[in-house]
Length: 134
Image 1 (cartoon, one colour):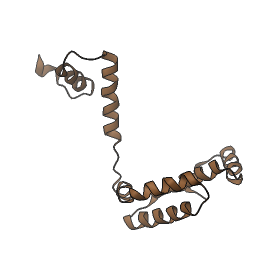
Image 2: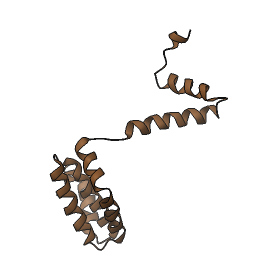
Image 3: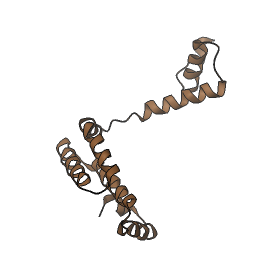
Image 4: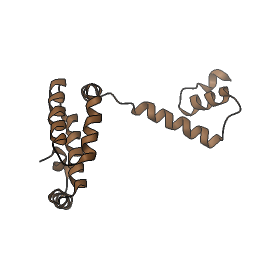
């Protein structure tokens, strides 16, 4: 049983079992994806690498061609994936700031110059001390 399965209620578990029992390639691909996400439960780099290799072999020996391509792509980034799992590094904060800046630009429909854009970014992201400019 997948660790993620433990968090399902009865209705979800029945639906999950129906999908799993079907012979659909989509269901198989979904299960492979869910299995891959369990790599985040690994504690050491050695565990993560071992888990990754077992997952990759199981996918390569499957009959789900798109997932085979995914496994090959992930294999090219194996080192970075393992480091991100162990170090818990994410670019989420950078993406959050980028989204905030994009929103400012779309709301303002462009700024007259870069300094105005910079001031808006600093002000709305909480890094501008308004009193120091008064």
